[in-house]
Each structure stands twice: as C-alpha cells, then as structure tokens.
Length: 198
Image 1 (cartoon, helix red, strand yellow):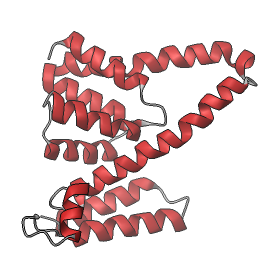
Image 2: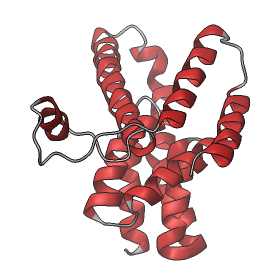
Image 3: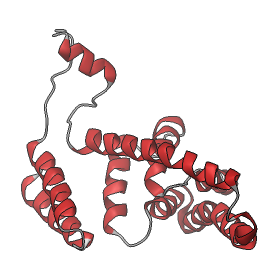
C-alpha cells in the first residue's frame, strides 16, 4: 500500500473517531484485517494488547504500527499524521466557532445523537476483545444459534477461564476503586497472563 493510500485511509479513521479510539476497532478489523489484509486477526489482537500497555491513544498506536509495518518509519509517520489531520482541523474549527454555536440546538442535537452511536461502537469493541481473548473460536450469531439447537456440525464451544477471570476481576476493581491507576491493572494482568496463559 502506498504512502498516499495509507494517509487517506487514516484520514478516514480520523474523521470517524468520535468518542475515542475504541470506536475505530470495528473499522480496523474490517479494513486492516479483512479488506486489505495488512494484519491477521492474531496480529490485531496482539496490537490491541500492546496499544493498551504503551503510552498514547489506541488509534495513534495502531496508525504508527500499521504504517511502520507497510512502509517503514516514513509509513508510521504518514499514518499518524493522517489520523491526526481531521482532529486538528476540527478542533481549530470548533475553537473558532465555539462561542457562536455553544447554545445552538442543532449542535446540541448532534452531540446527543452521537453519544448512543458511540456507546454502540464501544460495546461492539468489547465483543471483539472477548472474541480475541476469551473464546478460542469466534462467537457469532450463527455459532451461538448452532449450539442452542445442538447442531452436531457446530464447532466446539469453550471459554478460556483465566482470561475471563482477569476480565471480571479488572472490571470489579475499576468499579469499586475508581481512583486506581489503570497501569497497575494492565501490568498485573500482563504478568498473570505471562505466568498462566499459553
């Protein structure tokens, strides 16, 4: 993929990343894994784990990694700039017009409308993380339906118990201790994963 194509691809992601990097996970899987085959599902899962453990937003980390994988250092820089271009333009525009549009019903309506859509995209990202880390075989509507109907052709359904336990414990810690540093949770989970998950 050329540098210009990488730049345009990540400009698209930058335009669609309302609500943070996790809303991009579905797009990353559709484009980077399935359409352009720049990453395998396993590589993408590893990339998400690494993006969590390294400083910076997940979108920036993904852009830098994918750009570097396709076109070296220049590719990493190009993809990162592509992702940031819409954000810089939109933030400067918003700052310029903020006072004028602050009380606009149309702007308020747009923001209220984006919130539930963003929530839906984040939930779909959670399901993707679950498919990557907790379930050995992908869980889809068809596979769940086959298991519920006791279809003999259905793939064996199982759950990785240690990753499930880590996910539940992490969620409980975050819910109970709101001021806990997320770095400790990620580092502790990574250590347990290194010791017990193969």
